[in-house]
Length: 348
Image 1 (cartoon, one colour):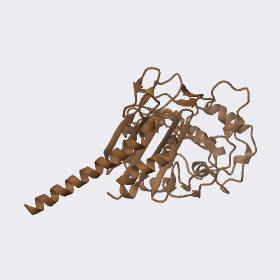
Image 2: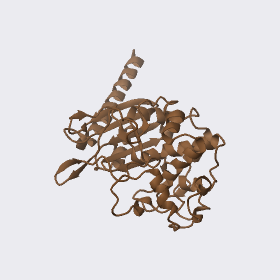
Image 3: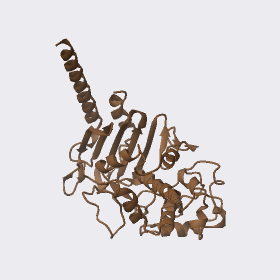
Image 4: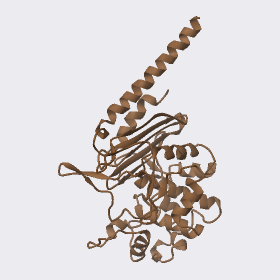
């Protein structure tokens, strides 16, 4: 009888702690609540959702609420999928990480001969940011071929390949084009066939304008002159490998699960993706960079930011804890919020 009482008290204490952790998360998510652009939040522990919730609105004009099914533009959280695609092709023997980018995209200038796929994966290629090459009178959205044309006409670079770190959307756009060359498929079809479908990420897609409709789509907003203004697209919103994926928290839970075993990537590929290849510089957070992942202490994480969207996924693999926050607004930046949300769940 005494043992039963002890067990009952332990269960009650655990339930109280869990309730406190959820209430803490709700307090931290207060800015996203109400008739404002919102967010979807997922806390996974040992593969199980401890908190799975939508806050605020996905579409202000239609007053559509955010739910766990809401699809957000992932922005740079997409980079981990582009990196995984390259690693899958390396496993297939279709390419090598030490290949020159010019081997796959020969229109690039000779100055890129020594830039490898590996260096594009960890942002040490030194290629010029394509955003800085956009003509001042540009009004149409850029696509990947536009980026390739601009880089092909730009023989300069920031530094010799492999000698420094500089975060590069350019590199990941080019990696997406390499996936197409090496696989013989469009990037969107390769990602669907090799990653999304096998993992049953049925509501995730690489968005291509006028080709696919995003289900349960959140639209991006920015706080401008005292009101929320829809800012869903910009000149750079049509490029793919650097940030074009839409997904929701439920599908991302399946992605997270696949990163613990070899159902998708081999142990060697996962180790390569999660290893600190270079120290991150020029960014506000102390980190190293793997392939599509930042590494800080015991965490693997990546943020994603585009006009009207702010997202982050943070994983504590040793604790088997993951927190994902997707939002359709320009502020606040969610990384610190996620760290605070995770704190009560760590060590349990």
